[in-house]
Amino acid sequence: MRRIIGYWPEVALALALGLITLAAAKGWTAGLDEGVRAFVKAHQYSFLEAIAVVLNKLGQGVVVAWILAGGLTLYLLWRTRDWRNALPWAVAFALTYLTIGPLKIWSHRDSPNSVLPNAVEFFNEQATYTMSYPSGHVVNAIVWWGVIARAQKLVPARPLQVIPPIIVVCTTTYLGHHWLTDGLAAVALGLLIDRIMARAFPETLRPLRRASPKPVRRVSP
Image 1: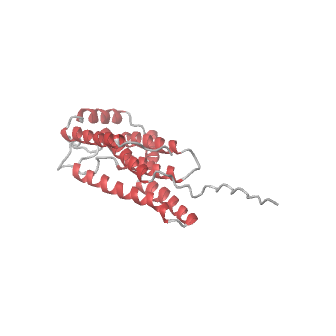
Image 2: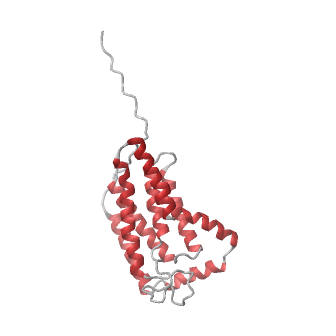
Image 3: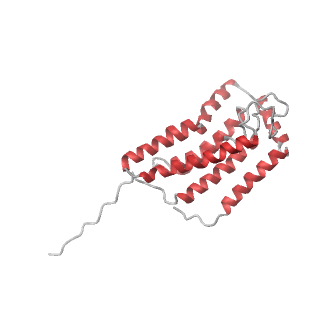
């Protein structure tokens, strides 16, 4: 694996998350968020909604964290009897749990599907659903598909790390579960966690790789 040099990507992602959060909290992005919501609501079609609901499962914690990543981790533990194969799952769970939840509680932002006129605001005391910022589905799609990609070798890793997050950003915005800035902040947070995971586990564990045959040592007569 290519060696990761320097910490500038992590710094850039942390700054991006901070700037998006500041802009959303100050209301600087309210026009953008409300404009995207209006466009989405004007283009709601039942068949697209049904497709979006299914595809949005690619970022659902139960599906990607517990069933897919958790199941793969258990399989690797069973095949290798090596407890280190559980570390990526455990670290990813801890990092997502300690970042997504506190940000949601702190920001106290309603969803785009809310009927409140000020639903886009942070620290909204009238909000009925206050867990919008950032999008947990998007963070999950980046972090957990990254864990899955690093733990398997059935298909190229890059598509698993790129396609699901793009799909989830689009579907979660289209369904009105999250504002656009919820998704953008989640992308920054998810990529930041993914970088931390790459540093924590620089060498991908490949316990299912077939060992290369040992060279036969010839004995001179």
